[in-house]
Length: 170
Image (cartoon, rainbow, N blue to C red; front, side, top):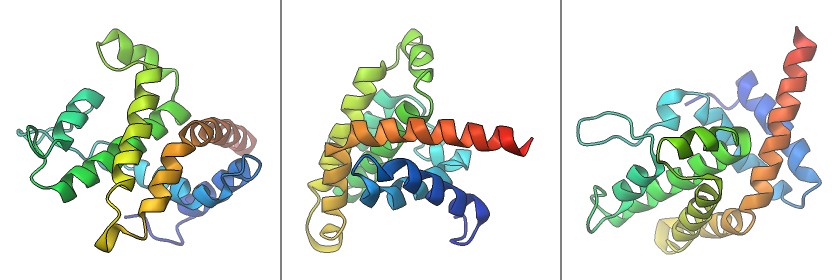
């Protein structure tokens, strides 16, 4: 995990907060800033593993891994964790790299609209785990599901701002 005071985390938090402020989703900027920080490490982006221990990169395979009845998830807690990751992954991919959807579609993977639907659905499923230790977080995931498109659009602006900052630094 990247430390709380790491400059990368602080940069992502500031840029996301700035980009999300005008969309009425400022309350989600902390979560999304942390998501960007964590996904800056490839092993976190592809943390779901198949039976052979290799990273699962396809969204359909991730969904299968989340199924506690017919899939690889050993428990409902694991289903929640995998579904959370799917929502995070879909938000990251559609917001930061929307052009990658064309590449995935040609490889038989989900297109852009299916990825958005899957991300929203996964966050919604996570929000339904609303008892005991998950009770406090459930509303956050319900909001991420409801505001998925706004968060995605905000991430596109984050990408543009990070690109601008990178050009200024050169």
